[in-house]
Length: 177
Image 1 (cartoon, rainbow, N blue to C red):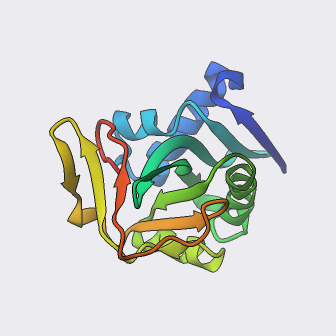
Image 2: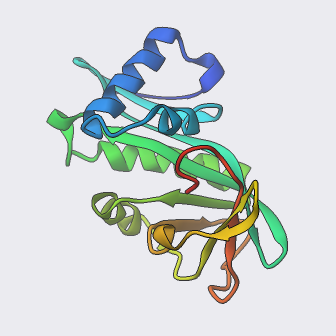
């Protein structure tokens, strides 16, 4: 089994196709083109085994505002493990590599987690954001109550954030968080 960390620009088209196929299968076809775009343009972690791509995750740069300060945020995206090798530690290996990128390159780490994914992230030290979540939309700042409770943070240089202060995410098409 091999683990590789590479920027999107370093991935071959065949590797990108394999990542997209893994994500489509892992999310039972509920991985949109916008979700795909959210995971590109940053660093990828790919785990290969004898059967091919076994696990993947990426971290991309976003901006999150807290208490008037915009933080360079490593936002974790597109984490998936092939069905036949789930629960074997590959998700943890992917996250460990992504966390190293976040710690070395960003003020803060963030991700939005499903109920199933949250177990992996909290076990690794990711902390659920208990405060309000907003986004800087084309129409101004809007609250995203549907995202509250699903956002997890990995504090680095920013230190702990005050839950009394809202988090404002930069805008993007599709799911904002």
